[in-house]
Length: 412
Ligand code: MN
Image (tube, rainbow, N blue to C red; front, top):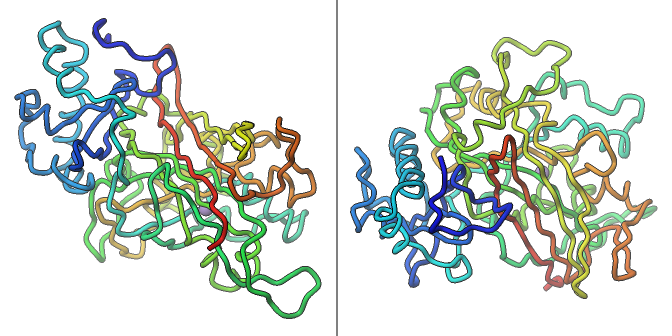
């Protein structure tokens, strides 16, 4: 498969012929389901109008929508066929390429919307390195993992309404915090505002209430993935989280990248996950390679424009894989719905340079990060921007996610 020579894309583009993700772009002010090649957005409504998407079962009405949900709900037989048709058009003869180029828009001219309407959002806690680091910091360095962690893909139900698309500013939250050494809380802007470098998967198929998704079947329920920053106010979180878990320290905003990269595009990057010891219960047992080798980065850009890459980690480190997360989520009969979002939890690797939160990178602020403009950071300051990036690459095939970016505004 070779992109036609008349279509120019930048070297190291995330959006190669092998990717062909889905998102929702505003074309002349109207939301259309779109794809992307290089620095061009491909308008699928226009493709269909030009007769370029002769896909059996495709309801063209689903392309004119403010979210991907109805498009996804047609099933992989349709969505995969659309993706393969686009790949074929982009790599075929000059006359076909001329036709599809009429559906191109420069990426800077197309505002992107949140790609899915998220009915429910769940955040897991599936990086062993992250859970271990937090256990060392806040509990017992000798017994950092809680007793359930190696048996359960631990998670909590998050807030869907405050998930925003990349580029949306994030206002510093206010809340209750307990100052060090104090007995009573104070109210004010969070002073320990942090990132959580995560990935999220979009559910592509529903299961009825009362049923469960078997771990062996779970992959067919995964539509695709995006970058996800689960912004976290550590001071609010620390005071509120016992006994029911995260609440206002998390639900003020989460930032998602606009392009959903399909599981089919990620297929070449499957790798074995870490060995799970002790052995997991039967309903979580799965053979084969269910992790993905995806390089992940977080850049911090200060108000002066200075930029520093503060972490480089990889999705392959996850202890619990997405099939196990979905099997666990539904083992009690919980129903998943198309467009639901499940985030991985902070992705930390084994080395200090691969931690996925400022809390871990600076070790609770004990080791501030030096920025090229001469300043330093323990946590985020007003005016700081965080941009997550990620891509997979193997044998000359590159598939990437673009970015999930957000700038911190002062507390209101
Ligand atoms: Mn999280």
